[in-house]
Length: 115
Length: 112
Image (cartoon, rainbow over all chains, first blue to last red; front, top):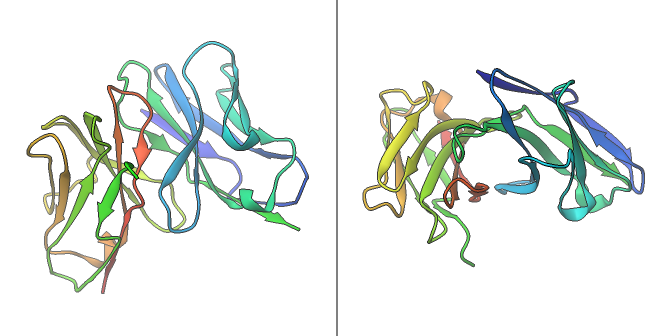
């Protein structure tokens, strides 16, 4: 079985400050890792994904994440946030051996960027 | 726009009524997924199809829920005898041969 824990339910931050959204996962098998963003009353948009290779993954809108296998973590970072980054962020995993199968999501982290 | 579309966007129904939602995936995508998202939670997997075949169903998908994808294109999700606990956002996603999942805007169901 797989599970995802997002360690912070809410993260308030001032504009242009750096931010880190934390994600830990548990799985008995190898996984793929994803970060999605959800704006109010909208569906989810993929920010970035880790499938293999370099453990530092760059995504859209200036976000990046680092896969740490020993700590089973996949934290999301941005060096300087904008007001427009205010949204809900979800970390997710899928089974590497069932490519294209279901995603298991964390509970979400609400990022609130203040001027 | 050729993204994933869902209809309706909002549905209010009385307890005990049946409701049906529709999802139209991106045209060349062979996999289609349904998720449910309650307030303040992440999406939870319900079921997914590869073409017409329903490959996996979650234990969340009780006997009152049924999903179909009859011609391998659009899909419907029906909830019979709705309960207040069914109130949620129902999200549809599609993918091509197991690549990343693209999500639709969701259908928000309110059961009164």
